Length: 397
Ligand code: LMR
Image (cartoon, rainbow, N blue to C red):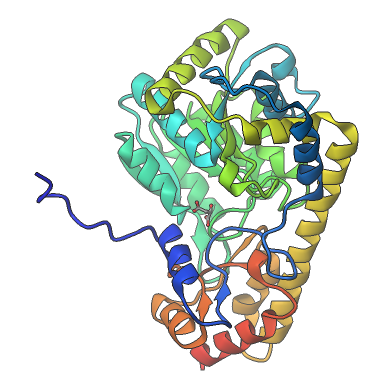
């Protein structure tokens, strides 16, 4: 029956992470998956999350299905955090939001919704992008193309080429954008560049699908949402996929959201209905626990502040680790190949190491980074940064 089923070669990120777990070496170092580890190399449970969970234990009750669209107070906090407390479109009920299974779930529900209502459209992703963008949109039936993004020569952005490519797209093309902390390169647009890009998106009547999975890891929660808020202020219809995996350290709870900015409350109501239908045909309704944690933290002023402080501290620690690895590599690298470690933002740095060098890092030194050369700097700490730098120096020699 299943003779024709071919073997799964594995996922470039998740399978590598699983292989790391199986690696028996004591001194192995995991800089592959986009997960924040603390300075002791542990996955943190944020204090605000722990306190929210402790208080939730007091009113554990029955566990009915959530509505297909998710837990209503959670959908509200998603909007407030991503679009801003004072967002006019939110007050006017022009944003349709559903709770989703993490950011990937949001992309999948959004892709299914788009395939139904924009069946002829094609999808455009940055070159490079997070591998799962392509998988999700292709599986939803779209042709996926790339627009220029990363400049390997400078470790920066090919902004003019990006803008020119997007300026040539057919109306209603779907343009996938990373709001902040670009995955995998760590290279973001400046606010001025976003303004120019939004001019083009508007002029060409393109449909942005903004992925904001790392809000809070670039500059801060508000500045990292600049693209979403500016698109909203300028009335550009769009989809937004957000995730609390990283900024709440709630990876396994699968807390995300999909929001669609519409032109009227009535339109948002219809769009919400069809997003809900896409949820139903994927997994019926989302799980409860993580959504309640996020809601509790964000609606309790003391926990909200505690969480913001903890997130800011995580962000500072990553910045410190960027400096630490930069300084240790300064004897072995120079110019852009070195400065990218501090210039790039968020959890990732695109090291410029090739696949063969990456394989040697892993096989000879137990240092795991992606074969694309992406390193998760959020996995560095005071103890492992020196061996990582030495291993890189060896493979470069
Ligand atoms: C990553 O890029 O490493 C993370 O977003 C985890 C994942 O699902 O790929």
